[in-house]
Amino acid sequence: MPRAAFAALVALLAGCAGPAASDYAANRPLLDPGAFFLGKTEAWGMFQDRQGRLVKRFAVDMDGERRGDELVLTERFRYSDGSRQLRVWRLKPLGGGRWRGLADDVVGEAAGEAAGNALRWRYTLRLPVDGKEYQVQFDDWMFLQDERTLINRAQMSKFGFRLGEVTLFFRKPEPRP
Image 1 (cartoon, rainbow, N blue to C red):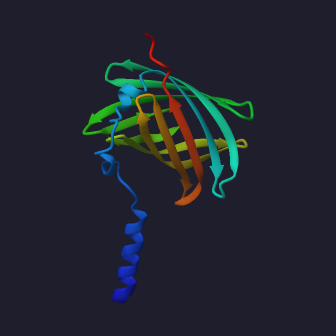
Image 2: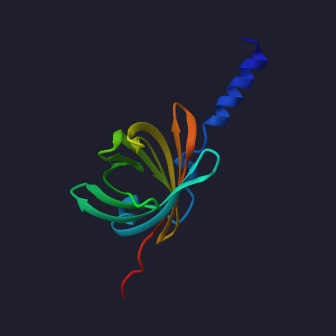
């Protein structure tokens, strides 16, 4: 392979690497997923296809509770088409900002990494669509804005091809006096 072609290939692959959670280590406020998702959380979001068209909106009621060394996070989804879905995550801190996540519709384990105000999850989800089930990959980024607000963007892909994007806003209730 000619040197110029090799250099172009290396530059292209380096450009695909994208950010790492550690890039946000200095950002504040600090995101502690085990603390943020403990208790009640509400969320609202949408899925857009690869052209940016809105496909589906949804709301989520979440309850997080500690069970031993895990955080069990129960998510109740209500979609704009009237459908509903339940997902229960079992999240475990592994140290050094790393997390492991398990859920019934996740293939294997979700791998999480937190640093600064950011949390990145990567996982494969079994997604039901029109009576069929597809395995799709998620690259899921969460950013803490303040002590009660978290913004989430997730890229969804299959075989490396972008299928769309999920945008989600989480809000903790006002603390009681």
